[in-house]
Amino acid sequence: MIFLLPFLFFINFLFAQTGSTGIPPNEAKTLGTYVPGDITLVDSYSNEFKLEDLKGKPIIISPIYTTCRAACPLITKSLIKVIPKVGIPGKDFWVLTLTFDPKDSLENIKKFQREYKIDGKGWKVVMAKTKKDLFRLLDAIDFRFMTAGNDYIHPNLIVLLSPNLQIKSYLYGVNYDYLELLNALRIAKGEIALPEGFRSYLFIIGMVGVVATTIYLMYILNRILQRRKKPA
Image (tube, rainbow, N blue to C red; front, side, top):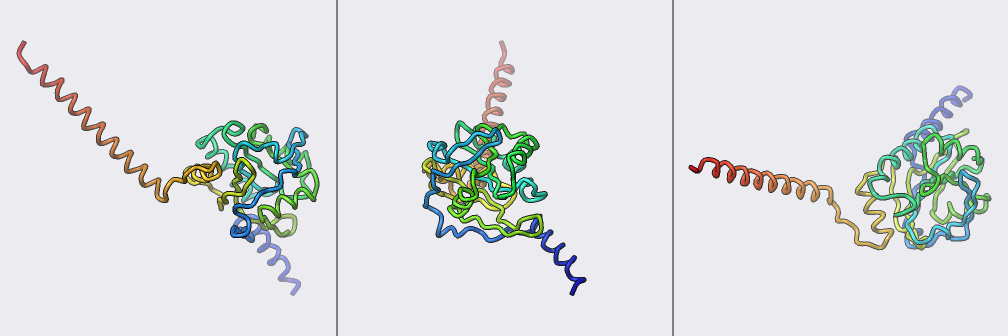
């Protein structure tokens, strides 16, 4: 039995760092509900603010823990790539990279922000002011995690809130698609979502545009050549 302990620890570590998505939120329970606005968060500059202070714009919440060595860095790197394609944090929406680890400190979130070159303004790296605030927020979005040694087994996701803090959608995984995020933001703002398969429509529209432009240019070129052939 004692020889199984290292193996079990390795399996726990492997799931915590790569394959596990933990227990996903019960969307039937959370979608359409509201996150408490009086939850107090602290950003990497030691500024305290309440969630309700961010009302007026959609909010993207990315739950992570700062010592994570696989899923959380992948989630953050994916957001770094895709967010500039959908808008400007602080102007069009807010982004909160939220540590769910009660042991994370202000120094931890400062280090995380520096490492990923997050501006800390429109996109904030934050921690809850108290454990009570932390678990009120995690309960509101139904985000559950389990310990695995010094690591955590947790769902890999981001949550999108409406400008009045209503939970509108979740996106899962560690790599986020531009159109998926764009659609989620449209839903968060109360706009009509783009239809499924919109990427295919965009490709078709683009190809039609290319063909039409090519035909038009060939027509113009042909007219120019015909004029040059006419005797003076």
